[in-house]
Amino acid sequence: MSTDFQHARVALGARLRELRTEARLTVRQLAVRCDWPHSKVSKLENGRQTLTSDDLEAWTRETGQPEAADELKARLRGLESGQRSWRRQLAAGHRAVQELNAAQEKQARNVRLFEPAIVPGVFQTPEYARCVLTDVSERHGTPKDIEAGVRARMKRQETLYQPGHLFQAVLWEAALHTLRCSPSAMVAQLDRLVSLIGMESVSLGIIPFGVRTKFSPKNGFWIMDGKLVVADTWNAEMWIDSPEDVSLYMRTWSLLEESAVYGPAAHRLIARAKANLDLR
Image 1 (cartoon, helix red, strand yellow):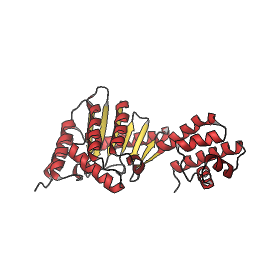
Image 2 (cartoon, rainbow, N blue to C red):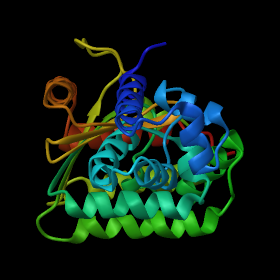
Image 3 (cartoon, helix red, strand yellow):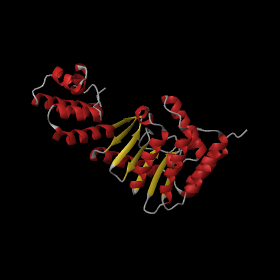
Image 4 (cartoon, rainbow, N blue to C red):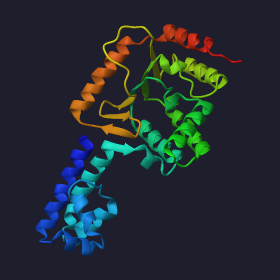
């Protein structure tokens, strides 16, 4: 299936081929210089393999064009920002991922977010977060630094109490009923959501079951200062920064917001979800 990520990788490969041909090197000659199998050169040039930073340095050095390194690094960053595999991100554990999220949220003044069936990480209680991170590690087969991840996720919430930040969250009512932890832990999580209602830095809206909407609840996404969209899929996190796509997500978020209820009405939906929990 063709994707923006793959298109970008093919374009990067074409640029690599251009550098090689300008240096009057064959595929085999460049492979020998870099101490690579010649198949690697072919895969990189045809967009079938992603360049690493070390590969980039070797390519520009051995083609005698070190001045091209900055350009290629920018292309590589753009490629990486387009799609971030969960398995690759989690290879260093949950703590690293949470610290990256924390830095991103700290820099943003306005975060708009939508989640269809999970409480956002920045609003989670420790036990809810612990269960979610455990599930993620088991699903992807990645390191289980659960406690370090929970601590880092809790530290993310410091931004909620710092002036100059606004988190505008819209949740589908399903997020209040989806059990990602034990019923007793879910009660505490729902109480945590109630405590956020009325905070100066938080706007919490909930889309009730049964309302007429102009959209379907697809993947969750976060919009950072109206410039960057971070959207989750099963296998990866997509970073989207093209103005046209960001504008589409902004319009979609506005439709979601229009369908949501706030204040006392949101509180009643949370209370209803809490009353439905079986605590036996």
